[in-house]
Length: 101
Image 1 (cartoon, rainbow, N blue to C red):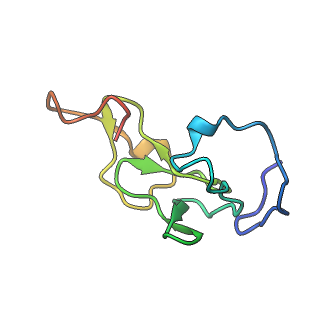
Image 2 (spheres, one colour; image 1 turned 90 degrees about the vertical axis):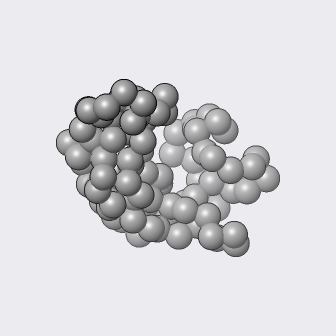
């Protein structure tokens, strides 16, 4: 079952084991606990996690903690993308990244 966007988990709740390397933040910062709407994911503003539109090169299907990068060799020029279908194959050599973009 998917959680509704905006759902906040009680402190200490773990839905499934998440490797520390998945989250792009220092170990002392707690993981995000609010699920965002489609096209958005949590970003750290220096003091708290907030849901923001996914940047170009990423997408979110909804009820997600973080935006997902396009697969390597593809790129999405869409901000707030709600599907991986926006990730298109890069036309020119060197326009993609090894992490997707």
